[in-house]
Length: 390
Figure 1 (cartoon, rainbow, N blue to C red):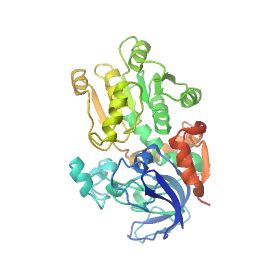
Figure 2 (figure 1 turned 90 degrees about the horizontal axis):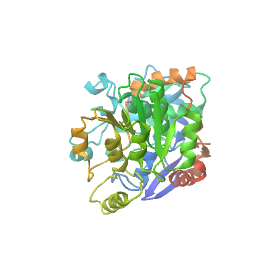
Figure 3 (figure 1 turned 30 degrees about the horizontal axis):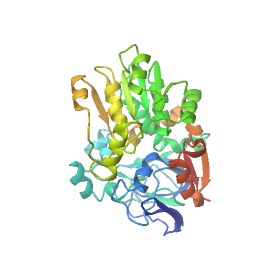
């Protein structure tokens, strides 16, 4: 089969690889119909997660058709059109039983790296390096999904592929970001990052009761899309001071909740950004926490900061004093796909959410390397590249 593989830092190539096979009773094999490029994939191809190996297949946000099942699979059948959560979960450990699926004890078969780095190993993630289990990803014609009864969900009739593909990752990640804010109605929520996850977080915040949502980004076309599609207010950090703008927009108090949907390669302007770039380039810090800093400083006293942008290691100049003295609630994590996807499929059917507009650049799998370039360089108004195997 054909698959988009990592060939070294910044290098991708479509090559012939062996087709996946059922290895365990709970496995399913999915013929991929749509696989989206996610912002967190860029951290892998750019070498910020040092657990990639040449030939690794990328991709973790996808949907397709089940073509084979293991003997232990009961809920999913051959022929089902399914969307698959990017996080692998066993369904039986304490974390899965308490719906904290991204913390699964049993789905990462290569836990040593993350145990040493983070103290414990979280769940495995499809196509997300050997730190997350070494699973082959979805930028391929076929993909093996472990624990298929737990991680794959039948797609309702009438929901198109390029809409439901985002129920794999961007939509549940955005929903969890808003869920973490503990909204009860009437809040002002600020979202850093107007990409796919940020826009889904904004929509989720609206559905959960936020009165106003303000999006922070620097790309006019993304901000315009968010304003047009979602009716949010916008702040362009390349043109204005974010903290001053948010104070002015909230009568000096600050947002009730701040969502960070950017991650370790956050962009900014000014000397702090140059400092972060230098520190990250020399590996004296692993992540650029620019947007996290802003979110903590912007949030009102007693507010919440929800972090769903991916971070891997240690950062410098973290405003711990602001978080403590402002009595902020900090919540963060990889999304619990299996908790949210069934509910989100119902909302897709009801028309409450339609993320199809994120699929600005549908392309063939063979064009995958070019698709990543367009996405990374944010060319041609790209929100998401979606790869379709022939």
